[in-house]
Length: 89
Image (cartoon, rainbow, N blue to C red; front, side):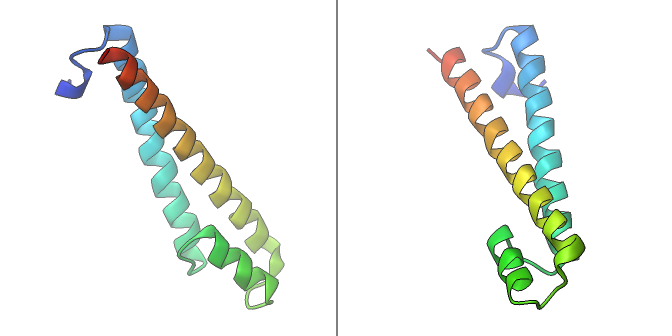
């Protein structure tokens, strides 16, 4: 296992490893969703939908998916950060 997990109990290390995997998957899937519509971020995608540059359907659903993926990624980052802070006390 990665040295970052050395200070964690085995069950916590496994949990952190799974959350890290979730972070990777959400980041990559968000990137793919945005890339498929030629957007750099959710705000840009929403602006293009609002101006009619791209059709609302299914672009708005893609916008929502990208937002959910970004929010999930951030929540996972915060969870890992909290686990590591607790481990390093």
